[in-house]
Image (cartoon, rainbow, N blue to C red; front, side, top):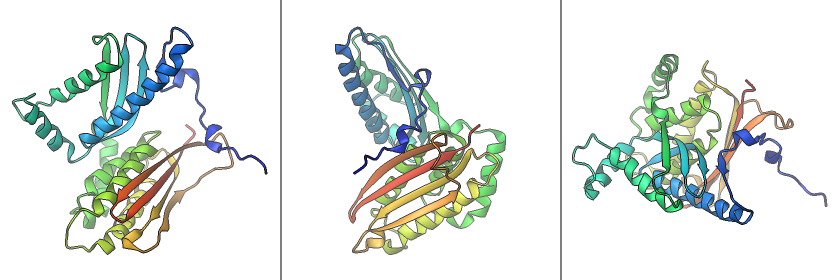
Length: 283
């Protein structure tokens, strides 16, 4: 039988100057140690921001044996500020609720375990909630008007903002996949007038309408988007597959810029597998 190759390897297009993770080793033995440290830092950042209900869009790590530099772009959910204030008050870090500088201090102290010199640590945070131009805000208002019947849902605001980041920022498939997995997990926990048997279909219908509106907007940098979700929808006895597809995908060309990420949602009714493909423009 012929061997199959994952096409994502050819689509990476990664050059040395564009590497998201860089480290300076003294000898060949340090390479394996730095790779281990890289994996541990990535796991810690995902868990740390997850505890504060934040979504990581991307991060870059540059470090050596004496210094550590991290650039993180993230998204604030509607529950983030409430969780940060509650945790920092319990620890006695802050006295005023509006001051959240203690969050940054806790992050620096915890990252100090990965370097020998604790003073040479710098973390740059980019909040994607504030990175919107006047024209982008105007486009969001038009989308809000067309989706008025979904406004009362708890996922409405986060879904609109995250999907808007997907069409305006590159390499954002991870952000969308993690949001969808969290939403399917929360659907099993929320209690409302709507029965659980309708929640999954209701959320999928909302996604289709929002994606159709945003991908046609002027600020969109995507050619197409594809989402495949597999699981026991609406407490069905067997798993089914539901897909959302808009736009064009040139999968036969290795030069096409396609961002891919997969996530898993662990629920009471089993697991949901979420796969996201984003085909970006060539400019």
